[in-house]
Image (cartoon, helix red, strand yellow):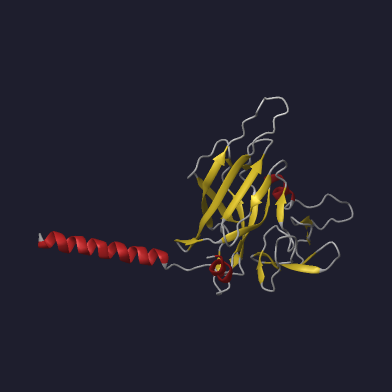
Length: 257
C-alpha cells in the first residue's frame, strides 16, 4: 500500500513538472508579425469544430529578443465554429449567413509549441497571393518588379521597397522583406522593423475573398480568432491563402482581463 501511495505521488509530481515545463516555453512578444501561408483548405461546409488548421511561415521572422523563426515554421490552429450555407428557396427570403471561425493556437519554435495571441492584420486569397510573387508584365520594366499585397513595389536585387509615391517603406533582405508597419484603417503603425513577407507596410484587412467578410480579426478580448461570414455561400480559406499575423501586446491582453 505504501509503495502504491509513493508511486502515485511520484506520478503526480512528474505530471506537474511536465505541465510546468510545457507552459513555461518561450512567449512571443510584440511587436512581432508572422507572415504565413495556409497549407490545407478549410471551409464552413466541410469542416467541423475541432478540425486542425495548418499553416507555415513564408519567411524568416525576427523576434524582439534577438532569436528568429525560420521560414517554414509550423503554425497550428483549429476550427472553432463552422456553419455551412443553406439556401432558403422561400420567395424574397433573406439568406442566413454561413460562418467559419478559426482559432490560431501555436507556432513551433525549436520543437516547442508556443501559444499565439495574435490579430490577423491582413489576409489574401491564393490568386492575390500568387500575383504578389509574379513580375509585372511590362516592356518598360524588365527588372522583374513585383507588387506587394497593398501596393508597395519590390524590385529584385534592390534593397529598398517603395510605395506608389516612391518613398522607401520596407527593405528586401536576405531573410525576406521587413518594414516599419504603417497605420491604415483598423491597423496601427510600428517603429520597430518586423517581417511582412509579400505584404505592404500598410496592408490591412482582406484582399480577395469575394462575397466573404471578416467580422473578427482577433483582438485583446478575442485573441487569435478569425471569423468569416457570407450570405452567398460557405466561407472558405483555400490552401495557398496567406495572412500576416500580428502578436498582441501584453499590455493589451492584461487590460482586457
